[in-house]
Image (cartoon, rainbow, N blue to C red; front, top):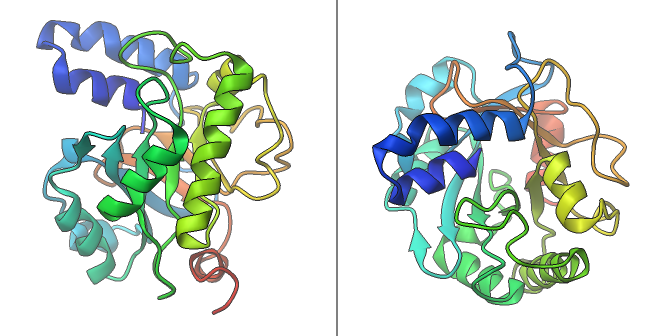
Length: 248
């Protein structure tokens, strides 16, 4: 999502654009990939994309989408319905995501807010488990003022509450640099939570501890589809298995 750029610009002035964009591209990865990596093409969007032309994205090859639903406990995407339902209606497998704000409330509180505002899951074969977008703080300290141990506890609080509410383990979106810095490169979530890695480069790079591979890779912030460019590390049939929790 490269949320440091997009979220910051929601409240910052236009004069900040160049500085924030340069910082965000540096944090997410090296030079952008010149071509899509192997995998099933998809995308993620937020309010910055507004009303999305979903049929056009489908015609161009996108087969899944993650849509921003919430942030913290006080923000909901005003375009969520058009984006979430629109992607579904053209045939995409879609899910929603929550931008974490560990500095404002507990993980469990934010998981509840997410589920209550579009982050739920249904066993329809076309809905992905919700995603936790946990990364650079666009508003202040990189690790939101938390120690590595406290950050690990915050993430655990979120994913455990999300599981309690939906029966699904949330996908975790992050970058290796942030994960290493703010969680101490913990491996405690690798057994249950699918990894959505962000790196704008020709290779996926180092993955967080415990993950032998990634589920999703956000490899560029612009390209063929509206929003960020992603691939699923597998076939459409395997993505359907994730969507239906192995009970298709």
